[in-house]
Length: 296
Image (tube, rainbow, N blue to C red; front, side, top):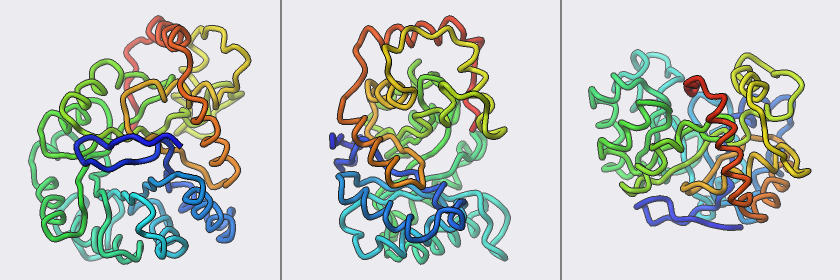
């Protein structure tokens, strides 16, 4: 699989990584055997980036359980800020964040992660600086190698420009193109490693209906845009190969299906869409865009 350098970290990561939300939230429906197969097969097939969060139910625990013994084979990222550790303090407080970090390491069965990220805290919270200091102290203590911010819109741009973070995780897809209008280029210029989330727009391209309120904004956009000829390619292939054309290090795809993840790897191996097709998709989005913002 193609690999790229994650900004100024110097780390080489696969262009397709795993987003760990689905395995955590849908553990009971999926079954531990399938989750174990997914996690090991992605490593066996060249993917080396795994992204999770403290609020993804059992996700951290499952990753530690099933591939903790292969820790030196993958770049491990987690996020903090939403799920509250009982008795540790209010959301986004320093004691709460510190307790969450320690719990995550225990769940992941590791002494340190590669990347510790703030999980979509507000721009105001970022500007205060306290939450950033928590990450810096964790890095100084050897609990993480790098620190990052996960979020969108103005907060994402601030995180890139403030100089505090090694990485940015942000939404980007053919249905969510705001980041191509300055953010991706700014991150590249400053050496901030970019991790793209939601590259398939919650599978809403070509969908008959949204599967939840969470996916509804993307469904509505898909219906509003007059798309160019997709030349017989499937919506998933269009989505992934569109995203491949932009300056980022890794895109994370969420799935609990081992076969789907291997299909994503195969699609990525085809490379980006042709430049003329990328231009047509961008023009179609811009023609319909009333000022869409990312729903974090």
